[in-house]
Length: 110
Image 1 (cartoon, rainbow, N blue to C red):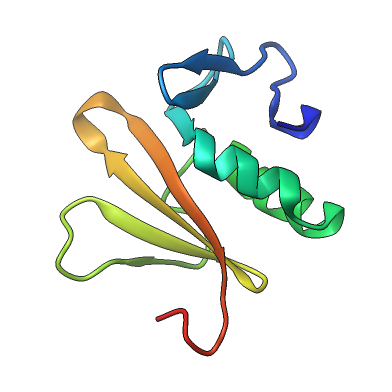
Image 2 (cartoon, rainbow, N blue to C red):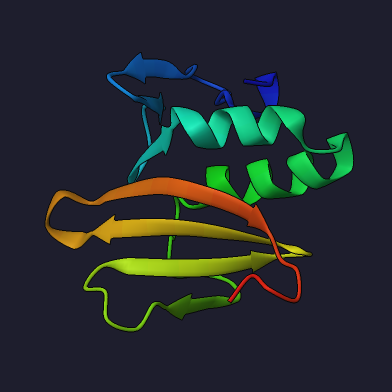
């Protein structure tokens, strides 16, 4: 995982199968599945930087940006970041976001 995912006052912690972004003033608990961290590491630097910035920004407001609720799912959302899609679940009662997929959008993505 690149250093962009670490916080200014904290650093990523590995919890089970997730990476946990932690800082002292965070509003939302953001967890990233290991598979997502691997995908981010393989993306071109410019694209991974944009996706990582969005994931870090979810600590402030996971409902901000070009998002869409996934039909048929209770807590699942998708955010567009250029040609990539970040899929995540929001658990309002625990104020937690779990990022479980980053995928490049192609003509067969949806």
